[in-house]
Length: 349
Image 1: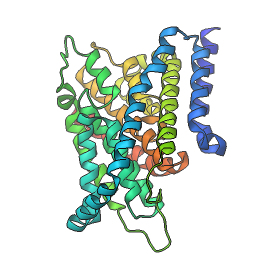
Image 2 (image 1 turned 135 degrees about the vertical axis):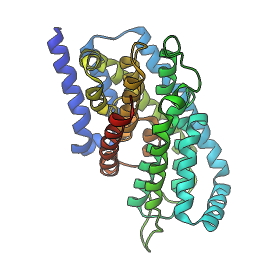
Image 3 (image 1 turned 120 degrees about the vertical axis):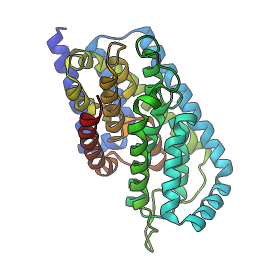
Image 4 (image 1 turned 60 degrees about the vertical axis):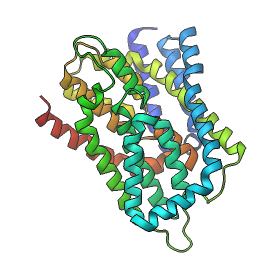
């Protein structure tokens, strides 16, 4: 297959991935299976099938899936106590300050106990709240922005940060455990605070007769296993999709100026941002280029459900649909991308 046909085919896959989850109800309901099919198509079009890729796709989701399942069982045991702790905190601080504190703590804490654990904790807390569905969706979305940003502060938080530190460990950057805190911490911390404040803004008790995202009940063993299976398929799909789309990223993104690359990384909303980081970031880049690339990936990753792991886990556990997520997340992400671009253009040298 010629290069032109490959690029055209991958462009069609990207377009379908962006459009169909919001225009076809069946795709929205079976998003994991759809993304898996798109991932298989992308790898087939690129001609990149290999035993290494298949092994990676089978093995890479295992740790995240195990964490989802294990923490699901753990929270199933402690959930009765969690409700009491949440009630005591709310009585002391008020609902808005409670939500702000929880979201901020999960965002910053995700850099140490991973975005996966933070997302599971978030979903359990949301399921205990007594607010209207629309408000709980917005709180979840803003909290996932906070977690996605905060997890990038250390190599422990998420695959993107692990890959970046590994790629920049040598000269001239000599990246260590604290490299990302020094590189983008100044930009991430305000984002976590603003996201927590936005979440707190929608912390309003439900009106009579209104229900939230989930009934206040325990997960059954079947619920936990099904959720873990969906996360496994989702992550596998993103690995295939990221690998298949890589030729498109390498061909066009590597030639872009820093400002254009920042906006092009909006595709992180539907692709694994760790894969994009692996394809784009090299030791030859300046600190300014790295800052723009990372912030573009991190902010846009919150816009749609496939954009990062916290979104995937929270949406799967709470039953949030693609259109519901996009309605809450896209305006916030667009404003965030614009504000960060203007500020970084002025301040980052």
